[in-house]
Figure: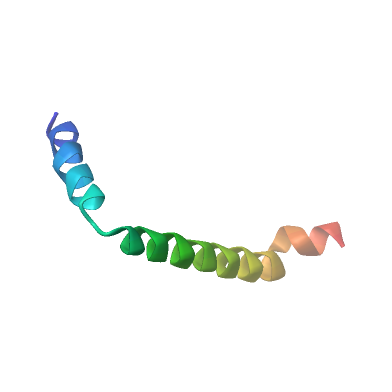
Length: 51
């Protein structure tokens, strides 16, 4: 019950942020995902098995 009650105030705080903050978040998230998957694909044991 408590987690559900905290979702709405947190959502309102996030929505109150400027648009540029949301844009920066998305850009850094995409950069992080690229780095994560690029690093993981090179060091994955499954990648060695496929080759």
